[in-house]
Length: 512
Ligand SMILES: Cc1cc2nc3c(=O)[nH]c(=O)nc-3n(C[C@H](O)[C@H](O)[C@H](O)COP(=O)(O)OP(=O)(O)OC[C@H]3O[C@@H](n4cnc5c(N)ncnc54)[C@H](O)[C@@H]3O)c2cc1C
Image 1 (cartoon, rainbow, N blue to C red):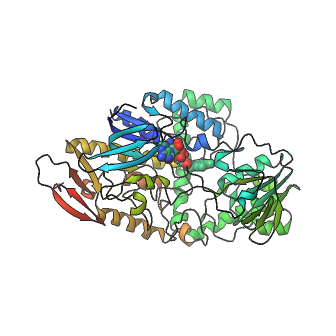
Image 2 (cartoon, rainbow, N blue to C red):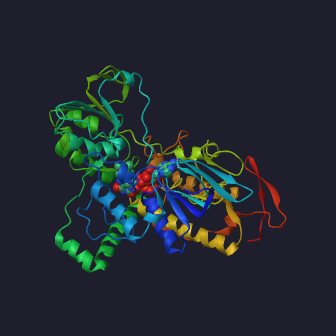
Image 3 (cartoon, rainbow, N blue to C red):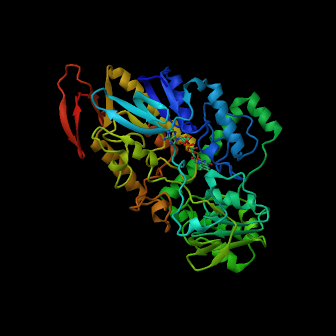
């Protein structure tokens, strides 16, 4: 990296969010940008999660970019290698490689109020940027629970997102900790190899049958030759999920019917009443993410599998002790314990106009304007920020909406001209979050009787979007300048010192 390098836009991360932002920037005619990625290749989630059985749980024709359809998806729910290859292909097809800086971890970003730009410190040097697009992912930093005695365990220990491909599970006593989206894919994939597989389950998930099948050669041919057919398929998949939203957000009681399908899915494979009772959730379906698998329950019914209906409390040498006192001997421990979601790790590394980090600004919970920008952090935008997650549909839809917002944000900066930054007004951020939280009250995520990773330490749901993806698209179609303070560098104009939240800043409040 050249000394004193300056770019218009610095994108952080090269998953769907970062690569999507790069494509969008090029389409907007912005070529002065870099994509900073801490790893040695692109792909984000789909590079890191290489565990056996890893696949998407939203059909591939919807879980892909609208601007980069792939007629060749091999299965309705394609596996990790194909999704990773798709993202590598996006980087090539859209000419993104010259912009991508691999092995560049962003250590710190500081807003320079004098120069109106971000100073970005990476593991390979420093650069500055007018605008930062943080696409570091909602599920990119694995969460390992702090288990007393884990150090005393002599076998292999790893997280699902950091799979140890050198670990040979054949004939071993394997403990799988957790029953989330990754665990339910891992269990059926490793059960035939493991000598004994013990699943530690704090709360059973709702698992629905997964309608996975190979996409036929004829379908692929048709989608390649007549692209309209792939677009129609995508639209159908999208519409079905849009229609489901009101049950999640307004009428959770309607979900009872879906629960009966979930119970039938358990009953089909699990004949032992005691095991069936352990695996049957006692909260409303949808409160936690609904999982899809047609192989999970059959795997749990196998004679080499035990389900401990309790979390892992302690490790004593090779003995794993559950909270209910159950003791299990193991050779390998696999943590399927999720990610740092509501405590977004990148927030520790962003220092705003007032000198505080975003993590400090968010100490009582994450909040942003339209899932993108945060007061006191001018020209800093996050992709998949607070309350942009989905319980039932493709995150790519949300990412693309945020990319439209980014494009308009840059256009607005151009129109305003000169050295200028936008900082969301506290009142606008408050109004947005009040609306979001008001709508959240009736949703299944808040009323369904479970605790989930959607909720932060204060029990607030700062993760999920309580509406349809179409509503979010409308809300992010363009930037409403009335929601922003326009911040200008000196330039001979009278500047106003404003008190905002807990810090001062210099503002040239324009009548916009
Ligand atoms: C196993 C698994 C399955 C999933 N399945 C689905 C699904 O079926 N449907 C769905 O909608 N969603 C799914 N998700 C959610 C998924 O994370 C999102 O759909 C999407 O891939 C997120 O893309 P992203 O670019 O925002 O983040 P990521 O893909 O996580 O990419 C973030 C990138 O930022 C980089 N990065 C982070 N910090 C730094 C730093 N400080 N400096 C430089 N680079 C940094 C990371 O290395 C990474 O490459 C799944 C998630 C997981 C973990």
